[in-house]
Amino acid sequence: MLSSSHAILNQENYKHAADAHNEMGLNSTLYLAYRDIPAILERHLFGRTKKESYRLLDFGCGVGLSTEIIAKMVMKAGYKVDVLGVDVSEENLKFARHRLPKGNFLKIEPNQSLQKLGEFDLIVCNFVLVELQQKNMLNVLKIIQPLLIDSGALIVTNCTSKAYKRSNKWYSFNNNFPQNEPTEIRNNKPKFQDDQPIKVQIFTHTAGNSASFTFFDFFHSGKAYRSAYEAAGLQLLETHKPIGRDSDGIPWRSEKEYSPYKIHVLYKQQPKLEMDLALPPVRAKL
Ligand SMILES: C[S@@+](CC[C@H](N)C(=O)[O-])C[C@H]1O[C@@H](n2cnc3c(N)ncnc32)[C@H](O)[C@@H]1O
Image 1 (cartoon, rainbow, N blue to C red):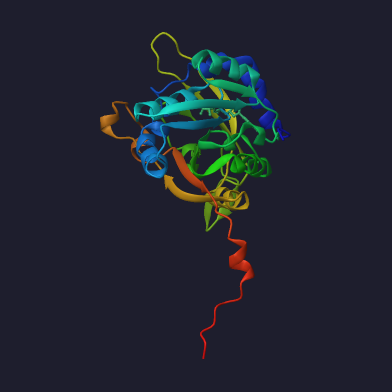
Image 2: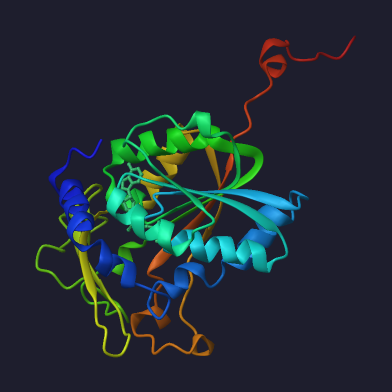
């Protein structure tokens, strides 16, 4: 599943520079990927299910940053949380285990079925689909879908096309590499092509400790995400594109004008009742 050379390069990078990846925190553009999640959880999870404790799966948990942030948000809302993070990178997982000693973290193979892990109320898959070409993105979504309970929510966060546009300058995210040029013309406008590799660099603003991490994303259009969700039996309920505000206390750049991220909230598609399909249409008696 990690057949493309760019996906392999990413995994090589995690092997050699997982420590730099681990330095990334919320004093960054990444803050916007999480700022509005408490309200999303309220709307799509706590408001729909009444539980004392929630089972959280972080698919592609990396060094555990997304896992830690979301688990703390669930706890802050007054619930217990049982945490499982899975990833294909053992190097990243080592940092995740250190970051969240009470969580469970499991190394998986790229196309491994995870049904033995049981079901989850909340599944998070942040910045993972951008590391996969379309066919692999669909495989991952098909692996995730059966793990979600009927009243559960899946949160999938990835970059927008604006994030990759070289004229946009971000607080902690550099996209200014010559190869990041749109390769397709649609409606007379230059556009990135589905599966086009995009080089990106993220960096920290921590005084005296400036780390940076370079990797490749694959561009996916909104249409590509929507058709993959549908093919995997997932229903897209909400797309949220957070914009930077003065009250965030971060000296935003393009973040104040455009959203670098799109946060997709999905439910499991409910199968049509077989009875619905089998019964002939009701006719009025004459
Ligand atoms: C950019 S990191 C994001 C980490 C974490 N979700 C976060 O937002 O902090 C992407 C992670 O996805 C993992 N990944 C890539 N392909 C995967 C796959 N097929 N299955 C599981 N994890 C995968 C990588 O190893 C990496 O740790």
